[in-house]
Image (cartoon, rainbow, N blue to C red; front, side, top):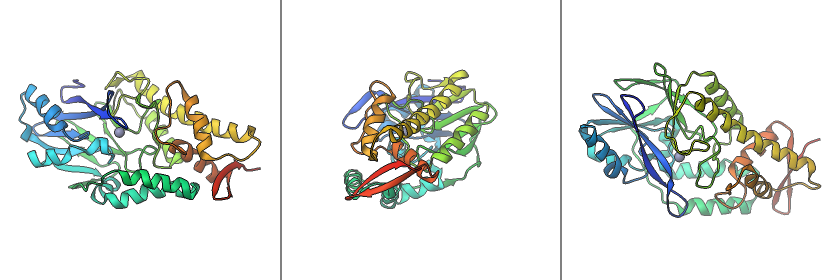
Length: 329
Ligand SMILES: [Zn+2]
């Protein structure tokens, strides 16, 4: 799909937990200058099946691809890097934190597992570790580390790198200040992706998340290109005008709902509650079709719980190797 004369957005299927769900896609944006830049490479295989056929359609030589820039290092955004590098010699650029994750995936897995460890029981930590170790680790090569507010000159347009907190610790948005276009990666997830209708908050930085959202709502953005088809715009790879503000507001409001429900549960329940039981109460109440992608406490609930602990509103109680939470009086 053509966003502007220079920006084209390709939709690539995004596999679900067990199979390829044709309803969820990952966006690969192609910027056509004298040289070609690709924003995120989706899963493996799409260089040959999607990107090359597109470039041929617009009469461009695939060898003109010289740069891949990444919104973040999650598997659904980086999978075709090696294929593209091999075919074209393109350089790979990502945030400093993303580079560390790609170059040292074993260390990154440990970092991810440590994010919520202080509010998880031993058993919950082990379940997460077991799940994380099922995934195969692949080391990627990174050529360039992008800094917050660094401006990339891509020929027909310049993109400013903007650190966006909440979804992942290494997430960058790319902002075209002249045309007021933002590539938001997974930082703006609206009401989640339609596969499991859920939001992913894996950084455990609620304060930073609200700051990023406030910053985005102050910015002038007339076109938004998110990395997936997030609700309520699950048919649109490109959002415009009022849809952009709405997407920011929906991303904030679903988080507010989670926070309010945690407080309501802790206020009304006669005993301290575990994060897993709160998750199984809260997630289905976000709307029809909402399920927890993995059993146990969910990251969005854990993120808000940890924020409430830091705000001194909630405290943690350890009892017989389990962890519970209650309001602080
Ligand atoms: Zn993603």
